[in-house]
Length: 126
Image 1 (cartoon, rainbow, N blue to C red):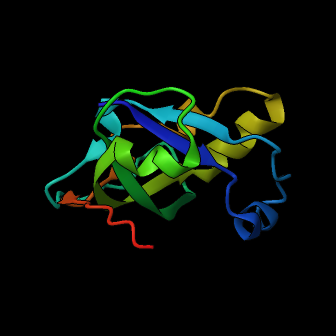
Image 2 (image 1 turned 180 degrees about the vertical axis):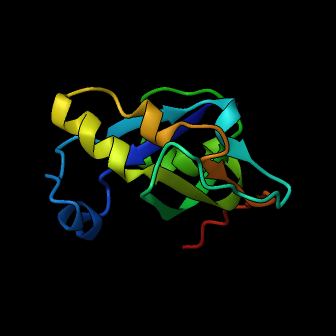
């Protein structure tokens, strides 16, 4: 499973962290090992003293595509759930100061709990 995440897309959260809002999406990824499912417990990692969380909408992509027009986007996902994006904020702050990638802070094992996917049916009404 490839987990593609979009960062700094909520203006209030970006402001809270003193981050500029990018003109284009800030994209990062989490590996398979980040997924935590089946209501298993999340354990606070020992390497951080400042774990933050954000509630996320999770879409399961059902077919490949590139340069998809907005009006056709809903045809490319067929299931939805909720998830949590855990971040080791103390590590992320240090990495950002050094201009380094955030993977250690964002992509650690079990940093992406997800719920049960449900089928999403898009019905367009005129």
